[in-house]
Image 1: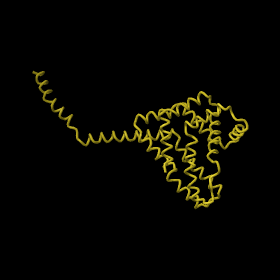
Image 2 (image 1 turned 90 degrees about the vertical axis):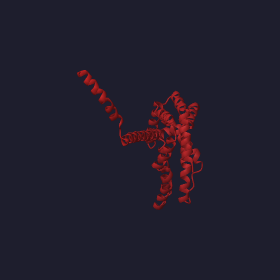
Image 3 (image 1 turned 45 degrees about the vertical axis):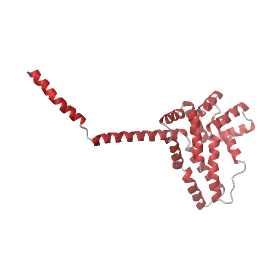
Length: 252
């Protein structure tokens, strides 16, 4: 009798429990979906930030500023002229403006492309190379750097080594991006400094400085590792990324 009563009670309660479980308010479902969408959006934004940060491309903003600042100082530009140049450059070359354009490139990629790009940019050989580049940037004002460059000019490295460095430069589009930056900065300077003209053969000078810089950066890097770097930069995902960067930053 007890068993029958218990089974009967369970049978009576089961539909009630089922009904209670399925009777979920619509606003609770909407909240759950909304929270999930927010989390996905935050994850995407973080992924994009990681790609932009690790790529190092935002350094072109500082390059544009340094180029303009050097010319303004050499020309003893008035304060008003300096502010005019800053205003002209900020729309396209401020850190926020450069990051926004890079953000647009990455946002347009498929999820698989973004994951592969981040993975490639975070590869150990590229990470080590970027660390060497950052260290060399700090060294540029040092006596040891200047002494190294003087030795290079007096006694160039073997032709095969120079050719490998030039190939790395082409693969990473180093010279191309620096030339592009100056090509956009110089007209803004000319618009404000009516008597100023870019130096003759400045493009060749930039390429020479890049070659000397990369030779210094990789002065202890074996040729085999340089070839590995070149291979990474020429992978479809990195080559596509750098081409998109060049096209976007160079667009008028």
